[in-house]
Image (tube, rainbow, N blue to C red):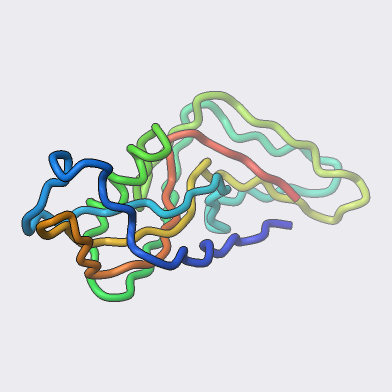
Length: 161
């Protein structure tokens, strides 16, 4: 059974200002700060391939699918800025929506004890909380919005039942 994971509870407070005022870029440039991140499976029931009892279900090399994440906002935020910051934080490209091609085949045999079964194509992703705003002089955080995110990487992930 696939369980949809819900985004993490937001961490209270603004991000800490940089240690030195010389490194604090003030002005109206909007930025995002990732408050938390955790790995998550992002799937879509529309990406399922079904099979009968005792049969084998195969996802073939090169098959493509699209996985979409979420972005909840309290106030204002720019999705591109939020996902760019998440990508820097976790060290891999994370986006709201991702088209993916299978880089290998995946096979699963439906147990005879089940009438039908399925394999779902999805993506490895990240979920968490963020805050969006800018720094004003002298390194004071001005929050414009905050919320939770869930985004997909390009790495395929399969599940079955």
